[in-house]
Image 1 (cartoon, rainbow, N blue to C red):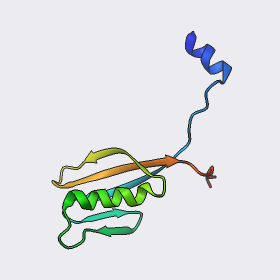
Image 2 (image 1 turned 60 degrees about the vertical axis):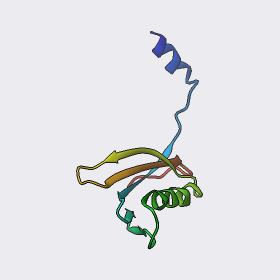
Image 3 (image 1 turned 90 degrees about the horizontal axis):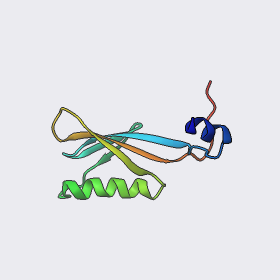
Length: 90
């Protein structure tokens, strides 16, 4: 009953998000939407991942989740940022 009352008031509008998925191979490659991000020679793995996240952070992306994969040393990074415009389908 409380939930119905809250929804009926329309007091809260949910945020719209834009998402990006990146495949991360910590041995030296990150791939997202056809763009490759390569580890520099001598660069530590943690510095490599930090550099990637910092680059995306400048465009408003934040890391929302990490999904480890069965293959060792690889994961998916799920990033999000507030949607800038409503995208129309079809």
